[in-house]
Length: 73
Image 1: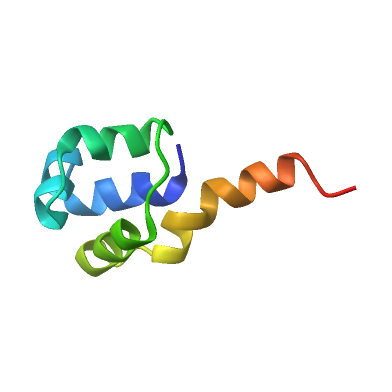
Image 2: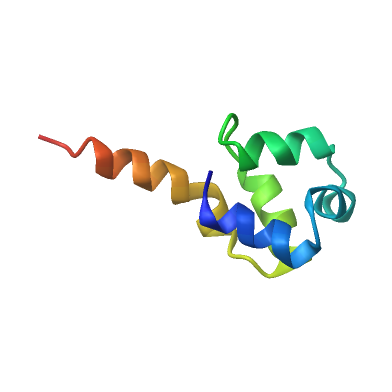
């Protein structure tokens, strides 16, 4: 789970409301919150338009954390 998707859910007023705002299923939002699926760049842009939360943070925050966990040799 990332801080960015949690912030977007909070700004929208919940997972169901965010899902309606961006035209996606609530189960999809929940999978992002739980970290089971990665947010696509397209979805990140939709979330940014709806909530003001950075699309960059939404799409790349978890990838950057994973990369820092296993730094290049």
